[in-house]
Every structure is written in structure tokens, then in C-alpha cells.
Length: 389
Ligand SMILES: *Cc1c(COP(=O)(O)O)cnc(C)c1O
Image 1 (cartoon, rainbow, N blue to C red):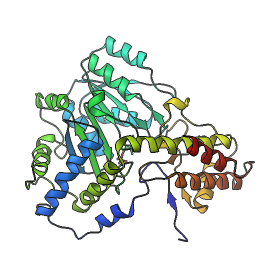
Image 2: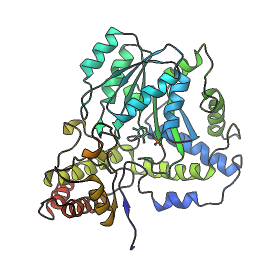
Image 3: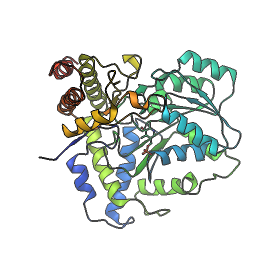
Image 4: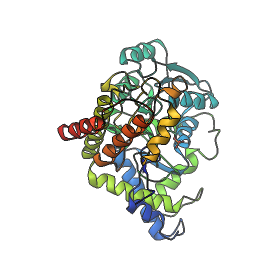
């Protein structure tokens, strides 16, 4: 279709027609029997997509930042110590958010494009008593992938709850809440979950709910308070009507369709497909002699790629040339390097074909911006990597 662009940013992503069609179904009452069934199913499926056996899912109208807010508001009491394993912009945001609730926040940082080592995290946890350890599985500002299994293990050893910002990773990167001992993980609809923006998704494990129930101070955020939402989520899952705030009926219907497709694909297959997409994208970028923000391939995300511009290429020109070539890409987000790199999202329903189209548009954009390259080398390398993976 002429005029159609491919949306390859780290959220919102390309949505499947069946998901968009579900959004267009006539809106029903939030307590109608058919909607109760849809919401109940969506909650059950949320738990399965997070690979949680016994977690409590929350699906609430809002963006990913509301999911962060729910974790902070419900788990932090004034004076609680929190360790933020910080790999970029969203670690900074989480720290600032937690401080609003009275947390005493310590950031464990690494140079941009790197990640704190498990040894450094272990040393900090041995030095100080923390109630929470937060980690961003994929920090969308750097494309750095955290070792969530390792962080969760250390948190548990030291008696802290492990909270995972999985907004740019859940349903794309391998995340196993129960097997890894993750206490809270959350995401938003518009990333690898594959639903238009507007839903915050969070799963709280038993230890997190116990910490919530053991609070001595009230939750100081009215909308985010689990005391309000817990009975609602339990009711819908038990197929009973309930009301606290009107759920976004059409978005929940779309969510149920998308989660169904995710589970039909299978979580292991889905993780594998994201590894293929990442390998193809990175091979294409490397063949064009571009480096990337993550300092090592073994901790580069599989849901997105953050290539650095070659010297002398202007960000604004490149992004508009790529757009004219039919692919929408994202600029930089990390304040220290904002104009030095761009971001490609490849998650959710994306195919190798989408990645090839993207590498083609990157070649066109770079060439038009004045970079000398041999046309097709990125495409060939990406196709080869996808075939080999
Ligand atoms: C996008 C994102 C968020 C924020 O989500 P919004 O829906 O934009 O509020 C938080 N954390 C990470 C890692 C993200 O990628």
C-alpha cells in the first residue's frame, strides 16, 4: 500500500490485524457476561505469558509508567531502602518514582552501554540491607539486556524483593518469573505484548503480596492502590462482575486476542524468534560498519537494537530519510548520547522480512545522509544471519 510505513520503534509496535479488529468490536458493559469472560481469560493468559505459576496479575488502564507506579506505591513505605540496578533512562525514572514514595534509593550504575556486574550487585547487597532490588530487563534508552535471573537470585539470597521493569522485554525476551524467583514484573500493552497503548500489566508474586499486606502505612496513591484492584482482578478471574474504575473494554478485548496468539506461538518459540530478529538486525548493522550502544553482544537486547551513527551523519536527516524510505525509526533517548545513536524496535509480531525492510531503509537513509556504503551489504548480512540462527 502506498503511503504505508513500517513502525519499527521500541513501542508502539506493528500490531496484528486481528488485535486491531478486536479493538473495533462494539463496546460492551464492563460487567456484561461476555466481557467478564474475556477479562478473566486475559488475566489467566497474562500469568502464563509472564511464566508465573502463582502470581497475581493486574491489568489496569494506563501506560507502562503506571505499572512502575503500582510497584512503587504498593511495595515502598517511607524509609525503605531500594537498590536500582541502573542501565539507563528507565532506571533513573524508577529511582525518581520510588523516592516519591519515600524510598531511600541507591543506584548501581555502569558506563553507558554497559551493566553493573553481578559481583558489584552482590557486594552492594552484602554491604546494606535493601527491601527491593529493581532491574530494567531491557533499558530502552541503551538496548542493554540485564541478567534478570542473576539479579533475582542475589536479591533472594539477601532477603530483598526483585522487581523487574519488563516493559521493553516481556513476551520477547526470556523472562521466567517463577523459575527465576522474580517477585514483581510488569509491562505495557504497546511493546512486545502487541496491543495499542493504554494498558499497564503487572504480575505480583506471593512474596510481593505478603510485603504489601504487611505494610504499616497506607498506600499513598489512590488509583494505584492494590487494595482497590486486587478484589477486582480476583473477581474477574473467578468470572464475577466487579467495579473500581471502568476497565478499557476494547483494549482488554484486544489484549486477550494478542495474549492468545502469543501463547499459541509458544513462549520458547517466541523467545527464539526474537533472538533471530536481533541476530539479523545486528548483522545488518555491523556489515554497514556501524557500532552499537551495548558494549558487548552478550548483553544486547533481542527486542531492539541501538546502532551508533557513523561520524558526521546528522540524526535528524537520517531519521527523515529512513522514514521517506518507508520505515519509522526512533532517535536516541539516553541524555548523555542522545544525538549519537538511533533505535530500532523488533518485537512482537515482527518478521525477518520486517527486519530486512528496515535494514534496507537504514542503508537508504545512511546513503542519502552522505555515508559511503556498498548498497546491499547490510541486507545480505542480515539475511544470512537469519538463515544461520
Ligand atoms: C516504554 C518503557 C517504559 C514506560 O512505558 P510507558 O508506556 O511509555 O509509560 C518503562 N520502562 C521501559 C523499559 C520502557 O521501555
